[in-house]
Amino acid sequence: MARSTRDYDESDVRIRPNRRGSRPRSKDRPAHADAVRGRVLGVDRGRYRVLVGDTGDRHDVTAMRARELGRKGIVVGDEVHLVGDTTGAEGSLARIVRISPRVTVLRRTADDTDPVERVLVANAEQLVVVSALTNPEPRPRLIDRCLVAAYDAGMEPLLLLTKADLTDPAPFLEQYAPLSVHHVVTSRAPDGSIIGLDAVHEALAGRVSVLVGHSGVGKSTLVNALVPDALRAVGVVNDVTGRGRHTSTSAVALPLPDDDGWVVDTPGVRSFGLAHVDPARIVTHFPDLEPGTEECPRGCTHDEEECALDAWVASGAAGPAGPARLDSLRRLLRTRTAAGEE
Image (cartoon, rainbow, N blue to C red; front, side, top):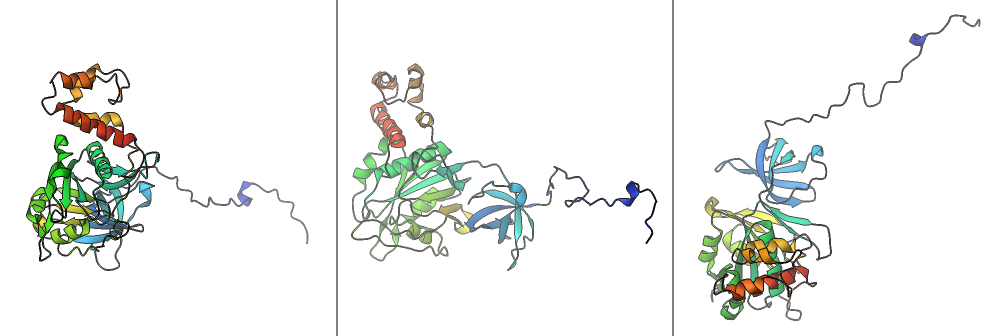
């Protein structure tokens, strides 16, 4: 065959198309103006149960996180925006495309040296620290840590004591009186009903409250009484170790009857790390003592000889409860810097 003597030009060369397409990529993301607003009620292996709709027309939707959110975490209590199938029909799946700014964030770390924060719940107003008065015995250091976490998160703490039918709560409450922490006490009647449940309802009404406590204190029993269809598993206390068994495996938000607030039940905890808390912020939650820190030396830990708070309290400027309040402040500060779980 004779070889062609024609000269080749660029039109004879095939250009391999770009595998990613010839259209330039845009950094703009969809606005999702029609996204539906909802509240995250539960998280389970990358799937989110979200409540959408107005009162009287609310339903649950199963959703996944949209790719554009990246690694941004989504937790119970988050207010989110969804697109896709938001009917809640069986087998349907929506996408979470936006997370609204959080009003409050309850965090903890594995211990006081762990730099990794774990967000437990978002947008809660009240941290309810649940503790049994006996069986299992109360753990003041763990309670103190929960109080510090509440103050740091901007949440109001509530101390909820159970099993008052087995022991007098007064001696235990004395150590928290200087902190002016609100408290509710419950006990069990002979028929098994909870005495004081109305007071608990009143303390939770119209608010989003997180229940935290170590295992065996009666937290799930309370939730089942507050929300009859919650069906939270109830455990027992080991007679040998005095510890309860974990019955709640993940946080879940539950509506109180008559749309009168929300409770978030969390798994039982045996430690509450506070590595994320700046000790200097704890003082701001003692408004009667904070003015006395103005004369403190720079970098004062408020638990040392040079601290000006001792003179402030001795002068009477903090009122008659000043000495007890200062002791409580320093107890919380030591709680933040002390190792151990309880």
